[in-house]
Amino acid sequence: MNISRRYPWMLWPDSICPSFLPNPILPRVQGDHYWKIEVDFENTENNFSTVKDVFCFVPKCTSLSIFENRLFIGLGYDNQNDRVQTNYLFEPNVKYNVTYEHLPKEKLIVSINNKIEFEYSLLETPLAVVDNPVIFLGANTHVTQEESEEIDIKLLNFKIYDTEGLACHHDFSEIIHGKSVDKTGNLNFIYQIA
Image 1: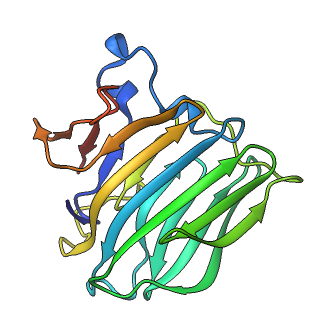
Image 2: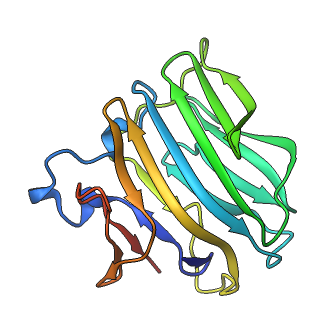
């Protein structure tokens, strides 16, 4: 799935099918729950000097972002948001597998290509718990008509795990009415906005 900042995608299944979604994933992707997000993607050479959000939770900005090929890790706390610059570089047109594993009130582990690269303590400041969370893919909510239509990232797989295992999986092979079908059958649709 090619994603530009002008046409990002969003995981917010409660907004399009609240009446028949028995157990949506987003309320469980919070600071008080265990979760793991796994994403396979390629960075592109486009928009080199602009922040590219592979994914971003809102309203608190826990995110996987790229700026000038460098990984930035967003940590969304109750009282603030931090964006941590790392020395890790995502070379253009190379496939990467990144996981964010959240152990509530303990730590956030970031692994790249099955190797733990970063750990952030959450003992003193846990990640936020919010009402009605949303996950954006390709942007961090501020979409305008002036945004570039060039492809920022190529998203190949997006998965969310909870304590029971795989709860949401998108490989973007099946798009129906502008929505990516959740391979788990759990109806956690991702859809294009803007």
